[in-house]
Length: 198
Ligand code: FAD
Image (cartoon, rainbow, N blue to C red; front, side, top):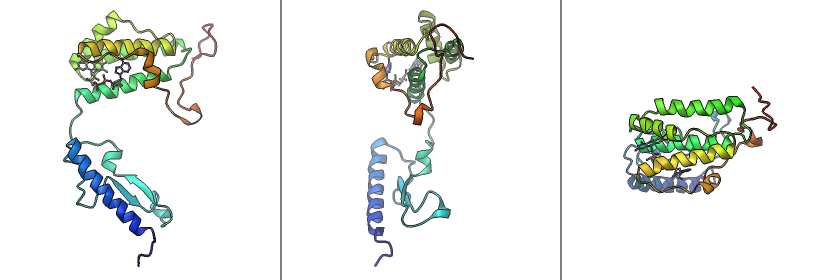
């Protein structure tokens, strides 16, 4: 009989994990995932996150390094880069203060300007330069900045023949970051009278 009564359950889970990995890797066409037959399932069972405190009562599910660190052997595509950048920008807009400081307003304008020069896809950067020229950054408040960003993202969407996003839904799509005690919030000014905090 097994020493640990949960052993059989863990083994079954590991088998299911391998099976899911096999089907998932076939589905998404990744051949470089760890082979389910070489003893490396997507999620491995380990007795503890800290080996020095290993004991059979603290079983944790740990994603395999290659996935948890987002490593991939193939280069990033223009589409992946775009999605990641829009995620960054819309999250920034969601976190942007209602009453930004003068410095914060200056910073987002500069960020967009730098993006239009340094975005690592030249055709995209060149196009974005034109977009910015016709749509100067509006970042007087969180609402204004997120609506402006939604609008310029739609300009890019249209140019690529994509569907236009309904900007009244932008807050539902891109909410504030969930951080304990709002530790991720950017601080703005506390008044509307232009007393910027620097
Ligand atoms: P994305 O357009 O990447 O959007 C990601 C998610 O954002 C969507 O799934 C949706 O949920 C949400 N979303 C979509 N529209 C809006 C909106 N208006 N407001 C809020 N949320 C929205 N690619 C090119 O081929 N040529 C270019 O010239 C080009 N220029 C780019 C310029 C910039 C600054 C950036 C960041 C990207 C650019 N891209 C360009 C990439 C392109 O915009 C897309 O990111 C890429 O084609 C992947 O598109 P997607 O359909 O997965 O969704």
